Amino acid sequence: MLKKVLIGSVVSAGMMFGSATIISGSSQNVSFNSKPEGATVMVDGVKMCTTPCTVTLPKSGKEKSVTMSKEGYETNTLPIVSSYNGVALLNIFWDLSTTDLITGAAFEYKPNNYFMELRPTK
Image (tube, rainbow, N blue to C red):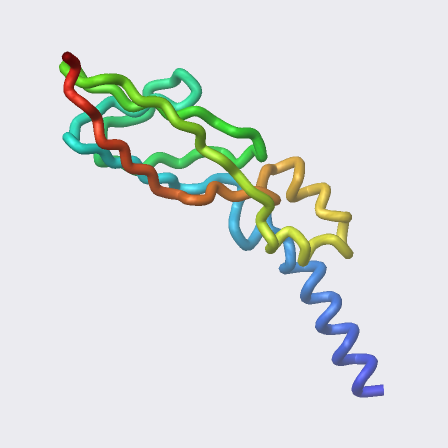
């Protein structure tokens, strides 16, 4: 009897608290830096900040594009890639992780910091 209660408690706790939406959220802080500092950071064409900086990006499971530019330097662009967040597996028994997929919490940006060395224009 005690064994059934313990197993039931563990399963219930996993279903209640196993959601990646609850544990890791539907957005993530991503840091940007450059050499030289003071570059403008644009994510998917939207100006976000000036390096060094950290922005909060919504998780979506879709690749984003980051561009850093500074007057007198060449502009650089690179992808921001998200991958599956293993924490979402904890929620598979609750709602097949659909909540985590809808909110984006089933994904995470790896890495979560980016550095670009800008070259002077010729």
